[in-house]
Image 1 (tube, helix red, strand yellow):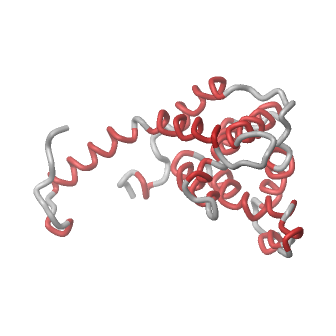
Image 2 (image 1 turned 90 degrees about the horizontal axis):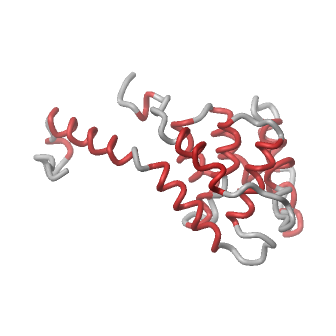
Image 3 (image 1 turned 180 degrees about the horizontal axis):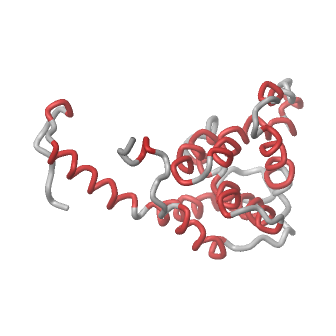
Length: 191
């Protein structure tokens, strides 16, 4: 696309300018599945000290979710729950939730967004933190689902001997989910 908008300040944009930008954004979004896959592959070289790479960890989590009969959206949630680690180590969960939010149901987004806090139950007390901080969400409708996600898929997925499926086995699912039309009107321009 060689066309550009007519404005230098958004307040001066025209209907045609914003139609052009909408077309450009939709074209860019078509490449999202491949961008997600590249970002996941980059996790193979991250964060020392664990017995598996972040990629190994998320593949274990997604394999466990799939083996457990989780639906496709939750499997993808397990695949991308740590995708933000490379750029946002202290708020990676919110980054991952922001990526997945337009494409999956609210429950999966909430689990991904809160998994960092819920996962801290397993370790934060060793450094003087409150392992029960997640209790402030006790009455939330997705509380138990997030507890289960962390217990069954996240905290359990650091085993180098676990027979994880390779990323290639999840590529079609990534392409399917991230090629969907965003379901939330905030992302589609509709009301």
